[in-house]
Length: 268
Image (cartoon, rainbow, N blue to C red; front, side, top):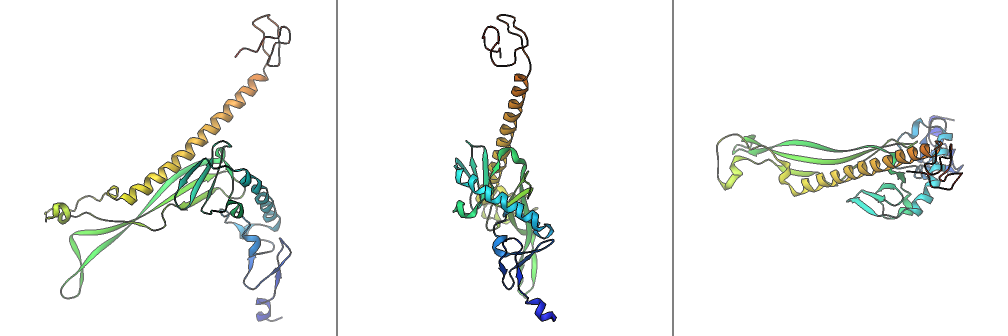
């Protein structure tokens, strides 16, 4: 078979067994995968090409089991605007998604204790504003003027067998802030250096900064509470396994919540 024939030779998906259409093949380390099966993987998973067929099947089993968690999910708090962080505070779990139909999207449901870190990353880009001279040239203002553009990204680090990071932008379009110049102060010209740039003047900048800080602080707080509860539960369990002496009757080496000799409750 020539090169042309090999290029258009139809392949079979090693996951579902179906025929892979033209340009629909997704390579695995030891096989092939159709685009329909690829859509079933976690949206935060990005290492497909280095996975084996067996590893992909394991993840799809995990994703299938995740559907029951989505069905049981009850949103008690919503953070974000376009991409949302949904919390089920009663169950101690959360998900991150921009989809409205949660059943169809099947977002990964994770425990608060799975969060290992969270930060807000604000990226700044600066472009100089030039002015046109009468002879058609572009020159700098004196003092120079700039337009600053900002993007706000949330990075959530998690414990998950298939991904360790959830990263998404809060803003759809960059937030632009023009530098303040002496000429702009009080509507009259002033000599001297340009006024220090302050993005906090922008309502949009403050909006996304505060949104990001709320997501970061909330996830770090619920993680702390979940881990503190787990630590306290482990300590209580270890305490319950320790033999105790009854202060009421002096019965020794009790193992339960009540004295085996007189029935008095275990002291706190």
